[in-house]
Length: 386
Image (cartoon, rainbow, N blue to C red; front, side, top):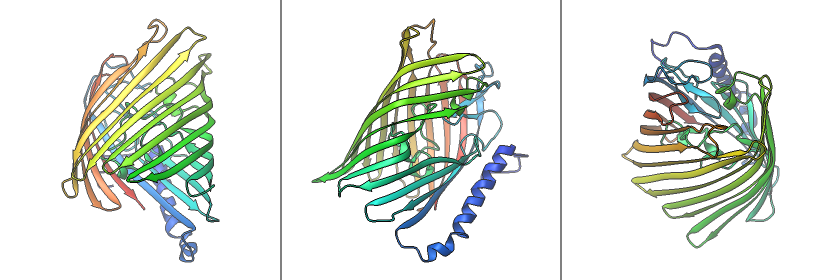
């Protein structure tokens, strides 16, 4: 909380609850479970993370199309969780805390669960709750609730310590559905100096009043993705990591008060290429999501990419990044596309192996001028794992 200074006069009730729940969770880990851990073997582990992230729009378009029912200047930093910064400093849009439990009742069976609270949703939410069973040293079946592995950082995008930005690029990361209930078959192996990890996955998800839709509608809503099926493959050889993913689903979105009910065939793919040369490193990712509303006679696709380079200078890591999101509609009378781009400069300082502080300035440009407007944003974060 080193970023909180005298200018911050009060917090929202939900943010207070977020901090309270995060504190209680940390106390539980260190007190009530400490007795059990005294007798623990490697069969049971508890880990967690905290990211206290704050920021504000320091310069923005006051005439931008309002977001979440409030006038701009504004900037959407987290689409999936409706994290929006405005011209007053706030910890609410991106702050989060989580605890993960890992239990291995046998050599082949593992049970994993993760609970997360956020500044935008202080109710504890189960992100992960699945069982994994190793068929042999290469194959594993996982059944339960997981995050959809659509992006390179999907499995750990809430853990701020694991990347150089204050948060993952919102041009790619963030849709109305991020988790699924189902199963996956995973494969891991090594071939010389090359490590291979791959999976096929499938399932479904239904969520009421998703935070994503509150950016557009204040009404009651429901979203479901059914028949989710996909595959991902990741290869690592020395400094080079390459990952590819493909997914499709049947999507339905309902806004009840407005009597909106839309169904679409959804498909998405992505490719990430990362290069780590010890001191210098490059991070890149390209994705495209397509929705085909055949009943309504239109479709749109949303290509996006991020590209950045950084350098390790002892405990300091400066990182320069460019990202862009550009929708293309088959019928602009039925669907008006959105497009935006962003240039950012981040600076990360590692306090120790388990914590870091970061600052980032973003220059966001609303290309189509139809959601939020242009904005310059300053953000700070304290990230810790335990």
